[in-house]
Image (tube, rainbow, N blue to C red):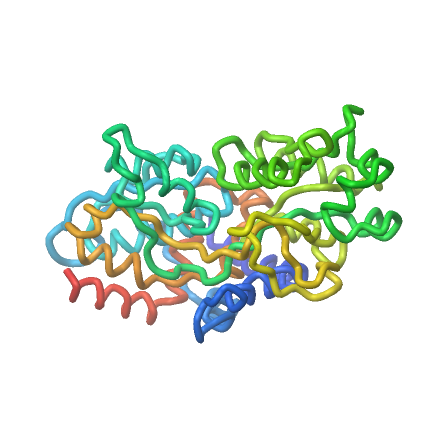
Length: 386
């Protein structure tokens, strides 16, 4: 991607912010609901301004080679990357920062959480940047082939994105208004309403859901089972982006929409809560997923707004032995903070076609350049720890 295209990135990002802010500000604020601490939304949303990033000088090439700082190479770190595109820039930021610290970084595979956490416990990877504690904690409860509880071998690290992970179900506003829909229960419990979302005529409403192996897939299936909805509601599984694209086409055609989404990501820039869709409440969520989100009435009509998913921080997950053996890396992983809006703006650019590994590396390099004072502080602390 050329410098000119990066300029276009900045202009389009500013234009896109008008659409994104409505849905994403409340996602960042959700951290306070679950006890994010005194920094709250300011820590997430105030850390970076668009002007700071846009004014930063962009390196001609992304720093993809190891050991970019002076000194002896510290060794190789094996990371994994989530198999959802909205987490790609976060992973690349960590990779480049670790290279500045003096490590050689193997960026590894794009992998589903179910496979990643098993491999992390087995020591096949050192970390990834895409942990969602509330949804992914279930993977810490599994047992390794040696009979060890996986959670004894790995841990969540730091506070990368406080309250950045908002998840739930969207329904289009015209259908919600016409049928009086406030909650997912409204759809499931009414035969006539349910038929509006039953494309194959089997008596079950269909939610455009998650990829197999994602944490959200399991949470949605468990929600359906716990409420006894198996005969009235089903999760359509597949490639999430493709499933969501089908829902966008339905919205454009004036057909009812029912889809799972999360933030940060480009999805609510396409179907914006309060403008095109509302978040659905869930009357009987899993107790572990019952923390409400702090959303305005025009975005969620249930009070309190329990969405079937508690708002989540997004954090690093790392292997315990790796953290113990590499204190410099451990300190860096614990200190990095990334704003939810920063990632969401970049995700829109990926959706618009700037989605190659080189594009993502350049975006990460620009983010690092725009946060140089914070980065230098994090690296200094890591070097001292090491």
